[in-house]
Image (cartoon, rainbow, N blue to C red):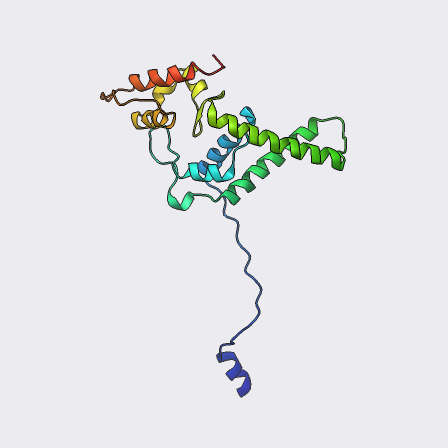
Length: 197
């Protein structure tokens, strides 16, 4: 009994233990809505969102009043965003499979060709997105084409409108008034260059 009490009180120098399981943290409604918006923009445009870019954008995301959407503790990693996007894509595939009547199994050559074509398309899309604006013109999660058509640009605050102008390199140095109209006019001018008009 004495040996047992000595062993019980003496710390072990090295030991084995089961690793603790991580508890899954649920995303907040704001995080989910933001990620769903980013995912749907990718679905609508055909330009898949890069999780690393989304993680970076999340740090600067603002609501329509110009206030930050997320605090530091709410920032997500690219891996968390990738997992969320994968779950969203799987959900869409499941919905698509339930409506699909034919089940064709692709062979290895088809899969390799599809992967190669996707890689080529991703690079092509990246290059095109760097050199020209494409429909829809999007700032963060705001579809500017849609907002312009629905006359909803005035819902954005002046600092947010200024951020949009800065993002698209719209020169607003001559604007000194604290009014939304000059910003909205310049953004509308930009949207009119989109092929949706």
